[in-house]
Image (cartoon, rainbow over all chains, first blue to last red; front, top):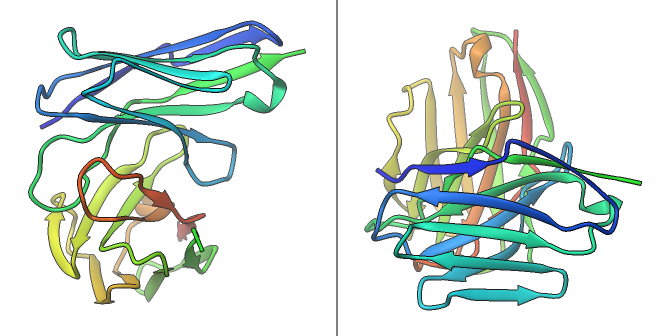
Length: 114
Length: 113
């Protein structure tokens, strides 16, 4: 099955700096890669996603890049703010006949310091 | 309405109890999911229902029994749980096609004593 690795496990940045989180996946058939943000005690929420026919996608301060050949994708957050502090999960969806079988990375605890 | 609603928010149960977790969505989604999340870990898929039929069971012990009464509702019946089953149980839904966003409920925090 699909295996998603995520690095780093913790990331501390100063407010205004950029943050980069990297993921790799194993199943070459995967072609949808969402990123979820989970604040303490809350539900995971989608912040951005990318499909395999696109190499890069941007939404305000957040961008995601995908390299299908190397099987890795990255989340970039610019001009970080304290409210960006949370756990971020990358995910991939391998081919399956029924429903979306999200496979999550291990998570990155991002802390934005004042 | 982009909400997935789960009840109860918190549940404490003994190892001999029987309880049920409930999940509801009114977005017309045809795929619904149960995930289990331990502290500081990613959500782990348990079950997937696609068009009200169980399509994926990730080798979950039989003490967890899912049910999908209709396209808007998803239940998880619990019986004879162990303390290690204590976790946050998340329900999610999506349109059912691949490559579509999964919306998560706020979860049920389960404690088995």
